[in-house]
Structures are given as C-alpha cells and as structure tokens.
Image (tube, rainbow, N blue to C red; front, side, top):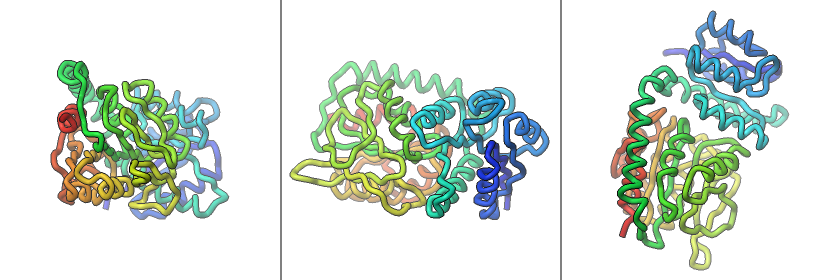
Length: 358
C-alpha cells in the first residue's frame, strides 16, 4: 500500500491541526509536515519531498499565488489551493487553477461538525485526485502538442461549423459532468462552440461561491451565455447553466417547459452537486433528446447517470485518458457500459455540433 505524503501550508495553527487530523483518518495518507508560511514550506519541500501540498491563498510574508508560481516554475508538484468562501477568494482560487493548481477547496467552518465531516470527505478525495493526476512536470512535456491540438480543433470548428448556422431540435439538451481538471476542460469545450446551441447544463465539482466566479469567467470567453443556474428558471437555448457549488441541480417538466431545480440534500457519490443527480434527471425528462458528456475527474460520479442516459437512447461521450488530468470518472463510465464514444477533449465540441445538427 503506497502512502500519500502531504504537506499542509497554512498560517492558522488550528487549521493545520484540524487538516492533519482529518487527513490522517485515512490510513493511506500521511501528513509529513506543516508550515505556517511559504519560506518554511520551501525548506520542508526540499527535505521531505511531499507528494501533494495543500496551500492557503492568504499567507504572511508571501501570498499563496506568488508561492504557487514559484513552485510551478522551480519544482512542479500537485497543489490543492484552500481559499475563503468569498467572491474575492473564488476569483483568486480560479486564477490558481490557471497557474497550475490541481484543485481548489473552500475553508470549512470549524465550528460546524457536519461541515467538518463533509470537508474531511472532500479533502481526502482531493488529495487522492491530486496524487493520481498527471503531475505538472508530465503535463508540461505534453502541453505544447496538446495546446496545438486545441488550437487546430478550434480553427477546424470555425471553418466547418462556426461559420454556419446550426439547426437543432428544440428538445435537445446537453449535459456535462467533470471534477479534477474540469475547469480547463470545460473552458476548452465551450469556447469553440457557436452562439446558437441547445441548452447546456454542467456539474463541475466546486465549492460554494466559486461557481459564480467560474461562470463569469467562462461567459467572458464564450460566444454562448454562461451563468450560474437558479432555482425555478426555464431552460432556454444558447445558454450554459453551471450548477451552484454545494447544491444539487436537476431538471423537471413544469407547464410544458423544462425548468431547473436547485436544492440542498445529502452528498451523492461523495459530492454535492453530483453529476449522477443531474444525469439521472435528464435521462427521465429528456431521454434520447440528450447528449451526455463525462470529463476528467477522480471517482465514479456520473457513471451510473451516464448509463441511464445511454439506456434511454441518449448519445454519450467520455473524455479519453490522454487528455484527462485524472482518468477516473470517464473510465468508470466506460466500464459501466454507458459510453457511446470515447474522444480526446479537442474533438468533443466538433462531435457534439455534428450530433445535434438536423
């Protein structure tokens, strides 16, 4: 049994102590050290060689983003960024993802036992995802070729699809699920799509507050309108709906229209929002008129939901191993038998546009 070695970097002694206890409740995780500022962290990184680092964004002497930049420039390794549950904290956390952090997490309320337990589950899952992800050094080697693939795919889409008006059925809906590595994968998928598309509903495993900032960033880069989903709103074409962090999202029929329902409930597949929750509801309401896509991420959330879509006649796609940061969720979906086609990220947008055209 391999043990995952973790270094906790946070200026709060209480947080360091709590995270250590939470992580070491898992026998496969060992906290090899803690640091209250980046300078001490550097010494422990050199001495202890951790597999994964948890990094608080707001730090004394050197802010977390500056430290993250130094890590990625000098000794790349999986980093999970911990941020406050504020809009400013969410913006900084998303910037950290763009700079190379594997995942982000919101600081839990340490006075709430239920929230601490959910944070324990969440933190352990993120540590495992980071450990099994393609390390930054590996991604750096593949990045130029992969980036060129994305650029080529975008040019091809513009030449073959974006310059034409796509005709699609009014009943069509597209649903996407992703976790670790998903923020960049979703951006790559959306930014090449034309402004006229069926509704797109997305579950990306993210904390509360963070999804609103994520939606805004996507909206700035896409021809489609991108927004955080709201309870009770009607689903309309040319719009992308991001499930709010910390809440489940489903669709239902109401007075002849498809509407979104947002609600709080227990974790499903260790997540809230859960991909399975969304996919299962879409399978019931839309059936063969849906396209389901499962992207990079650890675990099995989305596998049974994608199978439900597939069994109802929906066309389903899984991101391939090479382009996935973590080939967990797509792999589980493939094993479950619910995938129509496995594709690299660079080809998913084009495939979807071809499938919805009538």
